[in-house]
Length: 530
Image (cartoon, rainbow, N blue to C red; front, side, top):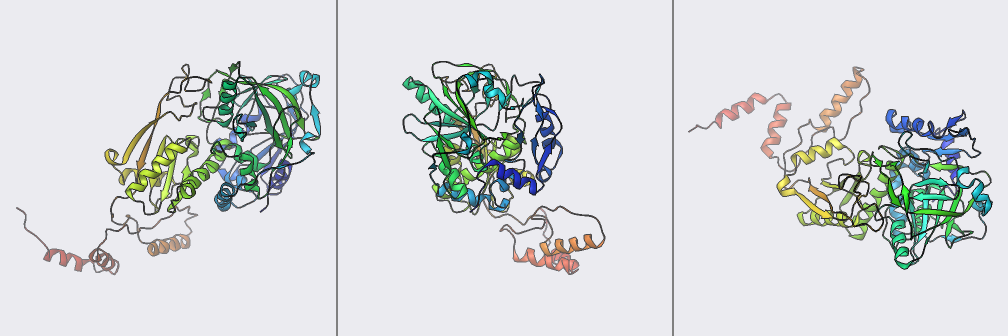
């Protein structure tokens, strides 16, 4: 198994594949950078998207930045995501399953490239984090530059288990970041535990991580899982880590930039607004902040960001792929359900709201077990839908067709109330009220619905011509030069259990031109009306 040990190796591979666009002209990070990237998510097909590397960055005050900034290199597309894992797109699922079932603990090293340059003390107050070319993500609405590909490392004060979580970071001062770990996030849980103990939370922000670490940071795992061990499983070898300079944590040795610091638990500050993955602005909240104690980086670092905000985006693509594999492993391995075929999340829902699960030959009780497991253990899925193996779960039209004709709401839809919520979901509570976003606040109630859109009994065949007939039609289409087709499978009709020998024979007779004989037979079967 191969993997990129650092971000630079990945960027070189993207450039060789024609998947990296260099912008050498001057770009204002506060007004131009993210809007330029946004255009490819609004106006290009996914397969045409690339990573963007900005090499000549200024801000609105005319300050020039020494570091380049890259966006889209983790997951501008599924193809780029697969390149980050050094595999083909159809191998992603197997790589994720291997990583989750065979994690590899990290390896501690003494020296690291990420600590080639070190800033502490007065150096932090002069420039500090403002040396980093962190852009404004939603110009016109965000109130500051925010990190987006910031992977925060914290440790559980009770168990010692490490967490790697992706949270935004508001630039507040040369030596201070705002942080917004949402409800249920590992960093939030660690902060609450430290708060109960009356101690601060030590943290380290990783910017420009190797791809395997970025993919893990956006995923969701159980609280007792060391996520750097999952990253090792993705790589096939241990992630090399080095001790921080000023806090008791270990960080990836081959990252580009590390920001170390202390997060107080006895005070909070206003944070936001910021454009979020739901497609709405996250409103101003009272949230934790980090006092920066040290910055380390490579000699020639690249600062990395994700484009998030309105879906589809880079963050929705990362979340889609990783969360799908986490849920699949939960059902297929943890619960032993061997007939689970696919788990799909839709980017248009932020890769959160709609979860479609394809299952082979489901039984009534099993569908209930699946739905309960997903709603209990998966931090997402306001709408959970089960479909049969003949339904392509990545084709929304196919899923909606199954929902329309394979389920009855009174029988096949169940609603569950829960306090496991997405704190950015304004359908739970108005923005001014908040939905569990304030640390220590009571969590409001929300709900999800569970829909069984699988066949409950045999159906007639689907109403499309048989495959061999459709294949002949394709040959004619090509012969006549009618242009390229983009067909969704199955583009042919297929049986679903309710079809008699008589039905099949009459259809065959019609193909042979003997349909009048069928009419003669129908006349013999004529019955009187009352």
